[in-house]
Length: 230
Image (tube, rainbow, N blue to C red; front, top):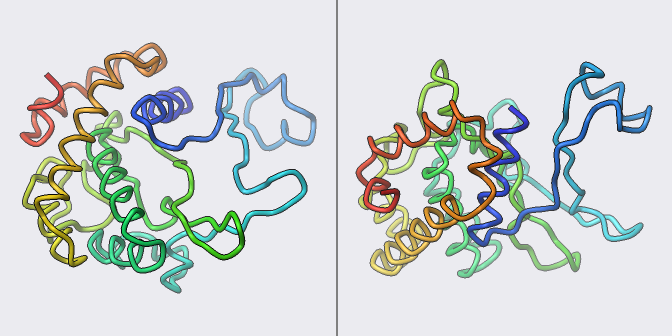
């Protein structure tokens, strides 16, 4: 799992997304306080630099389960991605909506079936203005065939990752009161950037080969992605 997540995070970084500094470390190299929470001593863990601290100052963060006033247990299915897009735009503005579209494109391209409400967050660097937090908890879940290849939230009334297409993003744009043509332009520009980043970043070297093979098989089966991931 940790190699998969690191690969996806570095892939996202290569595609231009805001990703905190991260690395794989041996459990044995951690401080004693951390070692007790990190599993077998011979294992490895993913270490991520906290982005909600600036020196001794705490930067406020709230995930979208909190924003929506929902229990963490209700992080799946209680909202749709259309509703999430409207929340992002209403709180953080039009530029945040565009970034949301890009991040949702990455969720689909990376085969991530775990982009639930607690894996989308806002941060308030100045204590007033909200913006989307850096990316975190990004995993290519289709690498585990026992996990259904389904979105965590519905998009255009559907959950299957393989059924996401231009119509899905058109519905997203219309729901948020935005120009569908502009949203589709953002989608395809971003997918092209994501595909190029996969070819050029270190992600391929980090991703377990069996996981990468399943990812390529997934791309071939999704018309929206096939045109970009050739």
